[in-house]
Amino acid sequence: MERLIKKGLSPKIGHVLLSIFQLIPQMQATMGKITDAQRSRGMETEGNLVIRMKAFFPLIGPVVLNSLNDTRERAIALEMRGFNLKGKKTFLNKSRTYRYQSAMQGFLCIVLISTILWRIFQ
Image 1 (cartoon, rainbow, N blue to C red):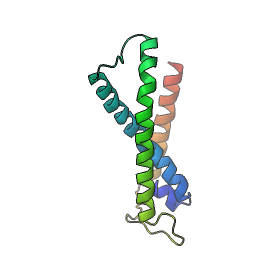
Image 2 (spheres, one colour; image 1 turned 30 degrees about the vertical axis):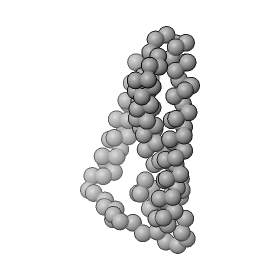
Image 3 (tube, rainbow, N blue to C red; image 1 turned 135 degrees about the vertical axis):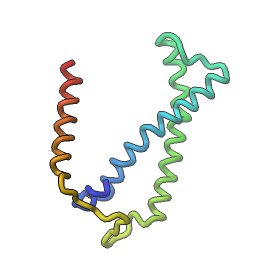
Image 4 (cartoon, rainbow, N blue to C red; image 1 turned 45 degrees about the vertical axis):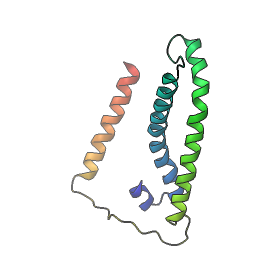
């Protein structure tokens, strides 16, 4: 994301994209912890579809509340770091370009596209 921001992407859009990639695994881990806690209290979380649906709705409340709390904490942290300040941004790391960087990027794009096509047509 840092490189995309240096090339002209809005820092706000970059942060949204980066936070999505961080938020999904965090919510999965929270859901696992809450599911384990509810199982230890005797809630049925495994079985047929009806039982799993009954268990799903009580689990969603704590996950959403925890996610909102984490979002608030992230907003406070961004505000403390001066995310909305006007002016030129500085970066900690300098961008380096390597000799075969574009060739490697092209190769990885081909691998990615072929993997996606392989999964679709398999």
